[in-house]
Image (cartoon, rainbow, N blue to C red):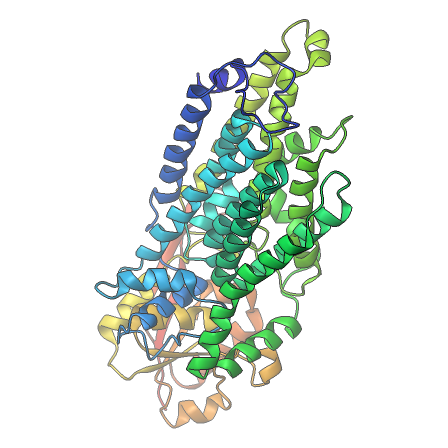
Length: 525
């Protein structure tokens, strides 16, 4: 019903120049797009909140939540999570308000989900500003059920909030290009400044803005406007730099920059090509690309393409690749898919080919696209334990349960050795016990500056400075050599298994089976 209404009615008189609706009769079209937007917001909120606490936090989530708790001065976290680490603190500062009076691990996920739903609205506004309200409504529906955007905004990650501010900046930039009013350019710079204060990688998107104006023949930007945007953006971005300097943590920030630039690659060059298009939706990608066949690229498409191409190129060249790093591309894909559907709906050539059924074909394509997205997104919101773990793609099964058990059963002041820093973060967040990762390199160039290596494991175990060892299957999948080394220490120091957390996984024959996920050993000096 909603799909039919969106496609049946004509575009309003306030459509943007160059919109796909310029060649059809114009009537008031307020109800159908607003109804589509309302459905997108409700469905998007449901998908981002449904069973949001079924799995405990993963390593990155515990770090950001722990930072928020430390900002709030919560004594249960301040010893384990320093306030300044690798990124700015806008998201963590907002979350810290909650940690002043409670410490639920789900508050950060709810905040991230709220930013995700707000991004659906911002995407609608981008589509409406560049084309018309129906394109915006379709884009909102696509983003609402897009697995890539849903999975990231169900976690305590900075990328969901950053993409909201960045997409808001894209909306103001679209308004500036369409109306040539400097206030929209300055609003774009302010939104991009907030995006930077959420995650500094947002600065890469300025490369897309530069590329667009450099290549655009139809649009230009005045030097005073550029200067004003630079002042607004720099004024906001400097807030993080000043916080580092005034707190005495400037060296910490510098160390993170060096480490991020020179750390070893964690994935192959094919990583994004293998994961992101599937998560966005192959049908969405195909529909978005189809809109360029046989058509001239107007400034609207040029802006969207420049916005997406630069971060894709940048993060592809970066040695470290994260599943969520290309999230700014998601709203662009949604808007381009909405544009393609509306172009198909209005195509006279398609109407002649289909003997007057072109609009029905367009409606069918939109229904197919949304159905395919909905089918793909459901496993994301109904998570089950898996034998493998992809950073940025979900929670950590059994981590919360193991950490909670440690907090309740091991003596205060206990020190644990884990396979890597990921499980150490989880234990420190849920168990409030000091933990060190075996895989943390003693070479400062090869480790995160926040982590302290164990220089001589045998000595620390013999002297009783490490009393417990924690093995987990997820770290073991990624580092089998360190897994074997850790279990060697367990055997050498007469380790006794005190507790095991298991998860249900699907075996090769399709049957459900229990598999040990986390085992806690007590070792003897």
